[in-house]
Image (cartoon, rainbow, N blue to C red; front, side, top):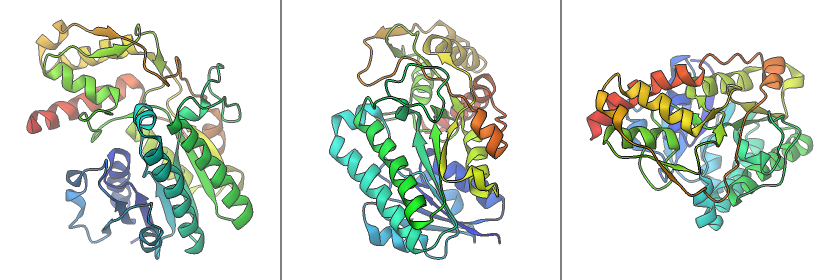
Length: 326
């Protein structure tokens, strides 16, 4: 067995995919999750694995964090309350989880002398910055409580690197999608939500006129970035942040067309479902596009999945698994 990794939020969409991958690579994996947004069905397949341990706990509780980092070499910190609208609705809980919880994890990791702390940062940190593509050292003012919390994470990580010598790397995720992403609930991500609606012949609602664009990033590209960040031996590559994306943008109108195109393979009637346009959502940025030059240069990042390739894989997974559930 290789070294031991703690994955916080390990029952969530990204965390469970990371768990699956690293168990397959021979690492021992500890999962810390309170199942607030993660799902038990995401971890059921790991429970019998000799290298897997599930700790049901909360990052807002320092003792839970300390128990989880015991004997761990690396932390992949994915636990957070995501969603801009959720943070606008409930900024206090978002701050408690994303800031206080993050600080607890940094303290626990420092005290346990882990080798490296890799954490999920966010493209929301770019805020009102107008320039495209987004480059890591040029950010604007945050546009939501969620964005503030993710920026504060970066500031805390930098201080822990400088003050305590804890190696940290932040990965600014750009609109990640793929297998295991939850289509249900008020704060569901757009791709699985639209897929589920199309499968039920319901009209998806686009916020705005459909011209807003995003750098949609398939889960396997994100796994690659986490592995590179965790294992890099380049001293220039640590104690910094990286865009984690494909480096291309797609409008919401184009996204819907791609989803219909892929879903029609399974059900031709989906191609006839009308799309509805609604009001623009508060806190949303109009356009998002990442420069991935820094990750390519310092980490050797080479994303394998464009949105077209990723959607083909993701839609096939959703079709099979959402059909089973519904």
